[in-house]
Amino acid sequence: MSGLTVAAVDLGAESGRVAAARFDGSRIDLEIVHRFANTPRETGGWLRWNVDALWNDIAQGLSTLGDRESVASVGVDTWGIDYGLYRGGALLDDPVTYRDSHRIEAFERALAEFGSDRLYSATGIQLIEITALFGMLADAHERPEVLEAADLMLMMPDIFHNQLSGSRVTEFSVASTTGLYDLASGGWALGLFADLGLPAQVLPTVVPAGTDVGGIVGELARGGLSTTRVILPSAHDTSSAVLSIPNAGADTLFISSGTWSLVGVVLDEPIVTRESRLLNLTNEGGYDGSVRFLRNVMGLWVLQECRRQWQREGIDVSYERLVELADAATPLVSVIDLNATEFLAPGDMPARIRGYCASRALVVPAGMGEIARAIFDSLALSYRLVLEDIEQLTGVPISSVAVVGGGGLNALLQQATASATGRPVVCWAKEATALGNAAAQLRSLGELDSVEQIWEVAAASTQTRSFQPQPDSRWDDAAHRLRNLERAESARRGLGDSYQELTLHHEAGRTVASARTTREATQ
Figure 1 (cartoon, rainbow, N blue to C red):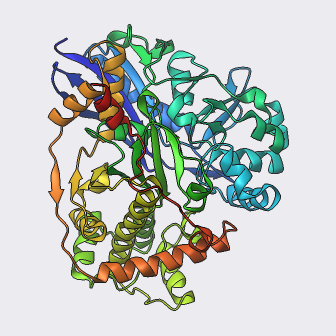
Figure 2: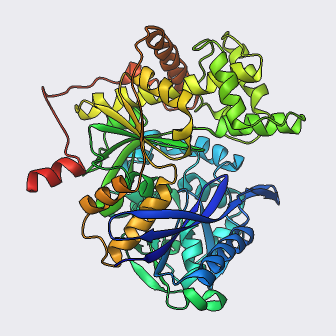
Figure 3: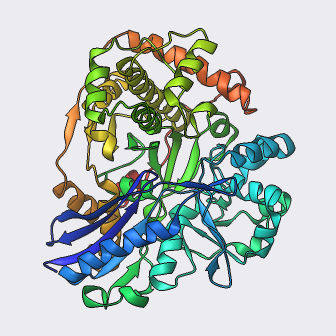
């Protein structure tokens, strides 16, 4: 259908956007109708998302679009892991953010009481402080009356689908990020809930991407929004972003690069083994029942917090200027583990970086350029280590790297990624998440027939940039240094020294099926 418009609402941990996605039958043209900040606030000793402010911005963007043209459907994606608790259809309080310190305390208590194997084997989700599992355990420990009062849990995108249509379900991809969903069995990990003493009655029904949950209700249902359907995309933003990467499979390392970097491959089945636990790899649901086998890497959050601190000190420096300063700094001098716990919460990140390096007898970066360079180099090295670990576990050689999201605009980081990994890097759409969100809606509306056609449209809708590796032995030495830092951090967090414990036995030439290879085999 020529001229069909759908709305893609994409919320990130730092900002959100409402995009008009216009489909002409062969490509999607994205227009950002409204862009807005997403700023958490501390209330009652908890760091929370401001749902009312976010909803007002979403409604403003949709109203603006609806005043211009007819909108066939709308879908919302957000980050995973965060949730709201309801009673009688009302949100009990603003959702607590994954950076709230209560989750760190809950993580430490749970590991001590239940052990990493029990927690990981139930769901195949990376043991990391930020998941909803540890949020609910924090609720049970710190404010049990709220958890006991709740009759429904909705994930962040579900909260806004609920406000749009009254929907009370959750989409598969975002449910899978919680640490409470068992991909292998295809349902909530009820045994884990029972062991942890958590209330299973709050769990919503899980539905696939593409589910139509009704029309827009309330004051928004006017003008071009009067007949708009609410269609669930792959509601976890990374899942929508990866959907826009043509031919994503087991031999392509995807990097969804933003506040977080989610780094992995697309498979047909989860890998939940002792080895995957020790390598701290996670299994998240993807579009059309696929699995994203990946690791969460801190991403550009650390740089964002550095910039905020410098602004507080009266230095108004742009991201573009920080890249210039980093490019002028000597590479691979300071290597840091960006996934260390001290970098999780907001705060004076330059001071934390200097303290981290000083406490470990590392070279302490001095100025803004040296700090930014350390962040970019360390990110690229983190990607390399994930690549090595996934190759080791799947037995499938990774031939290339595909980057989506805003981080793809940073040429210095992408060249570092190519050189660190020794693989060519292709940067796809900056707004890949909105593109994948819209594509899932279009398929549900009957405009696209298959994942392959989604890939064709995504390729036609995107201008790519490529980076080739520049061999330099310094990357090998730096990767070794980062590996040792990661091992020490894993041991400190109670997850063990994975590389001391781990002994892998691979069959010669062993491979795992990916979403792409399975489709190719059946054609």
